[in-house]
Image (cartoon, rainbow, N blue to C red; front, side, top):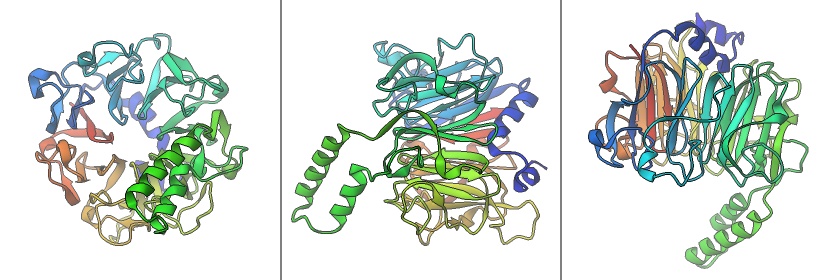
Length: 443
């Protein structure tokens, strides 16, 4: 039934988390983690895996309360929200993204703790990037903390640090339901379907917000390298880095949220930010992309900057972005004659088989390895991907380094593999950080 409602555009994908929270908060839950443990993002005590060690299969995080209702994975840290509206955080804290003093003992960062400063906010959902964290209050208010010189906090001109959760005042009056965070940019979706963007805006990764769009230093320099004009690859690389650093001194930044002009008049249903690209799904099924297209992650032949339509043949229901690849759960992509059949479609960077398929990388194509399954959500990391199915099972593929696929080894997988360690578990949510993964399991 839920898939039917999504298919006909009657329920935005961003509302699903809220509906589950309101109907199932009384159930006990467990958060499990696996993958790279070097930054503490697994939240596992050293007595279980050793200090900073990796976990090759889903492992319960013992110190979290039994009422977690939603989870989020940043690049190297993790967040969990409880039914009481508390946010727990653990992992990397160099930029204060845990809401703790960055000078606190590093060995304590892997221990999940409640984020201070949100005691008057009943949090509904949390989101994370590499350097900041964000939370949405029950009234739709947006709160952020951490550090970003690229304006990702959205707190105003020149504000690059928030030691404690701070309200994004520019969005007061808007009921925010979802936020997605890239390397230095951010998109926020309001309940009424309006979309707002801020932060580092090179390549049109947040669309047009009243500024002239421009190509980022890294994007333009990558073109130079591939042209063969430089005599030495090493000299070219050094020159590229120096040029990019020089241009970063005058980074194109939008310090406060603004409306995305290309999408005026369209009602947005879902958003997803990769490292330096973005996807925007509208309620009518139209899918837009903007930002870097070095790996073909925009999925379109149109090279114009800003938000432009993706060349996709299927109707997306929900979307996700990895570091340099894009994912969508789509209706109508399956060859099976089943009304509610869904498939995962992928495009972009595929160096570690994170697309889960062969064929053209810059064109959205179906992941055939999930044939017969009904995926309901996807998530992408640096070089791996996860899918949650209607059977409440998790499938993983791509880079297996550090055990991030949860399959018990470090081997890469070229097509989706069932995470058998979760057999018998009812998985509610599966999310990927850059090099680690989290799953939320109901008892």
